[in-house]
Image 1 (cartoon, protein in one colour):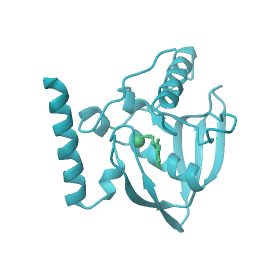
Image 2 (tube, helix red, strand yellow):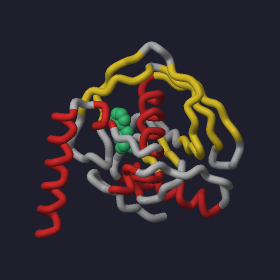
Image 3 (cartoon, helix red, strand yellow):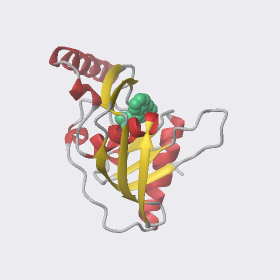
Image 4 (spheres, protein in one colour):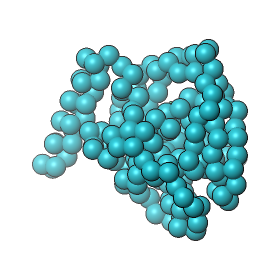
Length: 172
Ligand code: GNR
Ligand code: NI
């Protein structure tokens, strides 16, 4: 297995819309395995394929705690079919926006249709942190980042600092 490189904002690929997957084959399963390992290594609780430079609608999530058994979830072509009117505000982070955290308001529950690791169709009713994470990852598949929900001032400040970090890294 391979640890993949995680793209950081600002990066044009993170702003593109990912394509639907046509078939869950061994090649796609290999991508999902590598994404899961990359996510655990980061560490993070979710990862979308565009974050590793692959514009396909593929997401991995594991919200289990450190002292629990791992519970990896694989979503191919996740589609949110319902979002609750009831919302909650939670502090979010993103592996593509390292070091910055902000409160984001999202639906407290959602329903998602997807294809699983074996290529079978599934429907999941999610709430709490899982619902937040699913919405965050589906956003990635549409080129949307959590900073897009902040004020323009906060968003621009974060992007400016991330760009400065990128420039400093190139010199070193
Ligand atoms: O690791 C992550 N933590 C997190 C916390 C709150 C809301 C969403 C997330 S997802 C994030 C990993 C990531 O960037 N996924 O795209
Ligand atoms: Ni993210």
